[in-house]
Length: 94
Image (cartoon, rainbow, N blue to C red; front, side):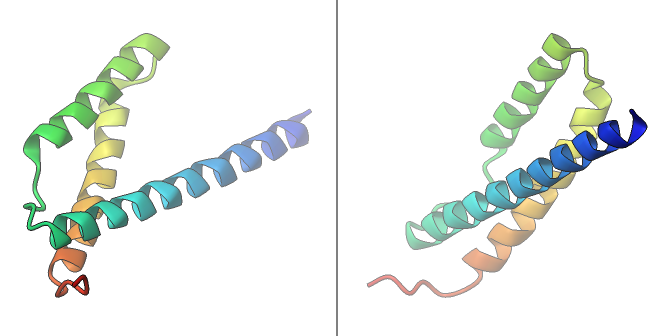
């Protein structure tokens, strides 16, 4: 029983990690779009939307709001770092 639960958890972890990778990839594409269209990297309103959505999810599903807030702070920090790197690189579009 314990092994089957651990196997299930391992599968969920793989899905979670792949989803995080896909999210970061999408954020990189957003960074390229921002760079190519001279859009500022920092979009405070968008950060608020993401945080509010996580808070609503926490309330709806009985997940700790503090946990999701901390998780999204990490995700948003990494996203900003990636976008800063991308936007700091000259555009290759013609």
